[in-house]
Length: 267
Image 1 (cartoon, rainbow, N blue to C red):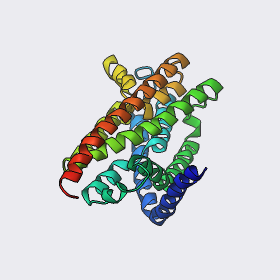
Image 2 (image 1 turned 60 degrees about the vertical axis):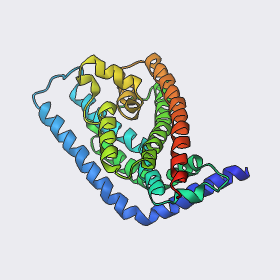
Image 3 (image 1 turned 90 degrees about the vertical axis):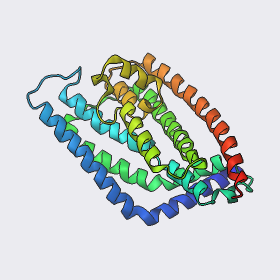
C-alpha cells in the first residue's frame, strides 16, 4: 500500500502543478476545436449533394470525426517533450540516484500532468458531440463498448510508451523538434486523424491495423460504427498487447545504451 500511495502522490503533485496552466490548456483546446469544426464543415460541403463515400454516409463521417477526436484526446500525451527536456538540461541525473526507476516515475507524473488537459478536452469534445447530436450515431451494444474500452485503455498506455521512446532521442541529439513533428504527422496519418484510412487503398488499412497508431483513432471508431466485428477487435487487442511488449523491450534497450552515453559525457 505504501508503494501505491507514493505513486499516487507523484500523480497528485503533477496534477496540482498542471492546474496553474489551465488557461494555456484552454486556449490550446479552443484551437483544436476550431480545427475539428473546419473538418466538419469541409465534409459537410463534400456531402452537400448527398450519397455515400467509400462506404461512409454523412452521419457516419461526422460520427467518425467527433468520436475519433474524443478518443484521441483521451489517449494522447506530451511525454516526449518532458523526457527530452530532462535529458537535455541534465535533470535526469537526479533521478538516477533515486530508488524509483525513471520510467515508472515519469509515467505516473505524466498521468497527473495531463489530467487538466484531459478534463478540458473530454468535456469540450462531449459538448461538441451534444451540439451535433442529430448527426451523431449512438451505439450502446455492451460487448462492443467493452471491447472499445479495452482498446482505448491499451492505446493510452501504448501512446505513453511511444512518447517516452521518442523522448529518448535526446540522448543522441538536441535537435529533436523536427523529428517530433515528422513522427507526429506520420502517427496522425496512420491513426486516421486526417480522414478514414479506409478511403485509401486496402494496404493502408492493413498497415493501420498492424501498427499501433490506428488504435488511437481509426480502429476504435470502426468498431463503434460496426464496420469491424468483435472478432477483429479481439485480434486488434492482441496486436496492441504485442506492441506493448515490443515497445517496452525497445525502451529498455535504448535506455541502457542512452544512459551509458549520458553518463559518459559527465552529465
